[in-house]
Amino acid sequence: MTLRLLPKLLLWAMLTVSCIGAVGTLLRTGSEPAPARVERLTEQQMAIETAVGFAREWMHWDGQELAEARAKRLQPYVNPELLSSMAVLKTEKKTMRQQVVAAEFVSLAANNGSRYVVRVRVTAENPERITWVIEVPVWVQLSKGAAVTGLPVIRPGQDPPTVPPSESDGSKVSAEMKQRMRTAIESFLKVMLEGEKEEILSNYVTGDSHLIPLAGRLHFVSLDQLAAEGVGPFTASVSFTVKDTATGFQFAQRWKLSLVEENGKFFVRALSV
Image 1 (cartoon, rainbow, N blue to C red):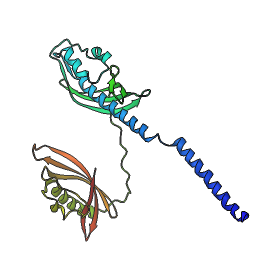
Image 2 (image 1 turned 30 degrees about the horizontal axis):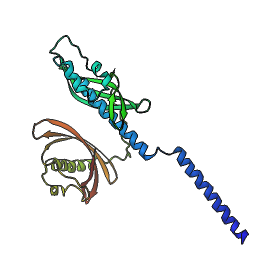
Image 3 (image 1 turned 60 degrees about the vertical axis):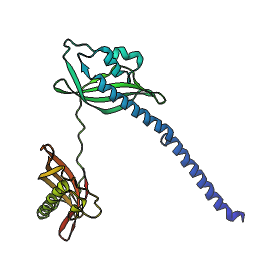
Image 4 (image 1 turned 45 degrees about the vertical axis):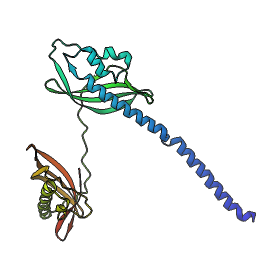
């Protein structure tokens, strides 16, 4: 009996050692505990919101604004000990003014514990449109809030990163099929943009597309470019011009459509950017 049980005991021992090793590895290399991760993400969000709000107020310059009024605008964001120096703004012309149009988060860097440096892009008019990039130092205390700890640093602007092209399966459709697809897509775009009810799309989409027309908010003007590939289902990238119904402004749109062919007719299955 003992000899028959020995192989099983050895097997169970090996499995136990293996499991213990795996658990040890997970404990050593796994991600941080969930509560700590939530706290860290909350801190980061608090730092971002504080920096963006501060940037909007700090970059608003008005030659006629009193220092007390400027300090009052900055007070919700700034370490109280630095508020008076943060509010200093001098100008030779009281009529000079810079109005902030937008303040946007760009990037975040941790800087020793609960201290962060937040990069913010500010678009302003003075009166010409201009873009500033500033780095704002922020300290966060979860139970009390966040505060800007120093004057922001002006940085040079930077262009957005170059996005690599999407992967392609390389199977371009024939010229004849592309022409038939173009006709179907033009009809779909017109109905999708100008149609009032979901039922009107039934002749142009599959039953599981869940697409809803834009009810005439935009008018279809022209299909300017079409690139299609696949052997069924097909992927079509379409560039087209639309006109805003309310203002008459025309602008470009680019949609990626997933299509299927049934009985010689194309139907849109999905729409994405």
